[in-house]
Image (cartoon, rainbow, N blue to C red; front, side):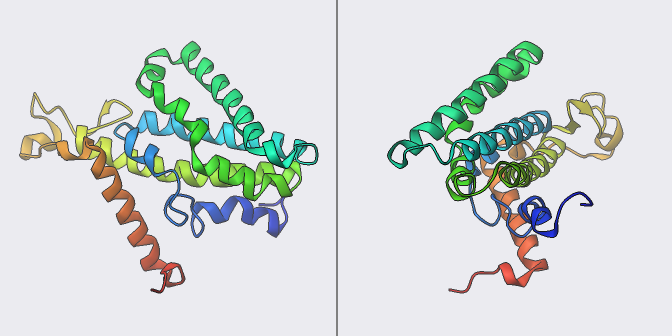
Length: 215
């Protein structure tokens, strides 16, 4: 991370692994369950959250000394709601079909506990640059898990990636289907997202024993 100090680099790198908002902090699970049946939807949601959290963190940081403590949550909600409206309008303009599929879930970014948590825990106490890096890091860590879950759910559930048939044609029985492979329809159900997230958590803690909580 040549242009960044070691301390600033950690703001981006830590949430990608050992302080991931989904697998370590257990935040933002709802969207991991709801929209990851397709890889494309997972990527769009990830990019949307990166935009909202990075810009939102900067705005809250710039305003941190003038926001009355009693109304800080209201101000934060207004900031994130404004950014979500921008994302929603851009999707409707350039990816209308996908915007209809995500519909209510884009709106739910407003109540994503990762975003409100970073506003409270970081942006209110740090400068704009570090808040921007913190937003990028945490949103990227969140998006990484969404993309991994979406990859496996679409591949094993539909035999496609980004809508492209990568395992063959299940009707014409080409590719893997020619040797008896069948799509696993359970992968398209929301509980399978939770199981995949659980497997990611297991792998992560198997590789880093320090992450295992003691009872």
